[in-house]
Image 1: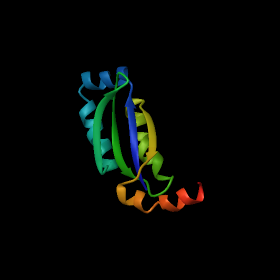
Image 2 (image 1 turned 135 degrees about the vertical axis):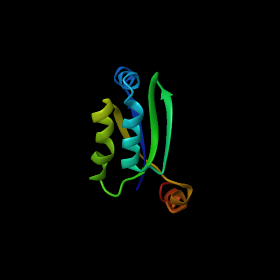
Image 3 (image 1 turned 60 degrees about the vertical axis):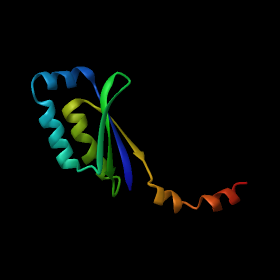
Length: 101
């Protein structure tokens, strides 16, 4: 199942990694292991962060995807289930609308 993996990086810990020159290598290692379908990085709420599109085959995959962020950066991680338009078309919205009128 496709999820957005939202990562929020604490300013202080990430600043230290940038200043000691390890931020890029740590991020590259995590992304290489995670193999996201897509990755977008941004500032949100005054913190660095990002959104990764990842496939979660079962709940046991979640620690493999989250732990590197926790361990390397003390990050906050959220998993947001998502759909592409084709998934939404298969959802049966018309039938649900009829059922819940």
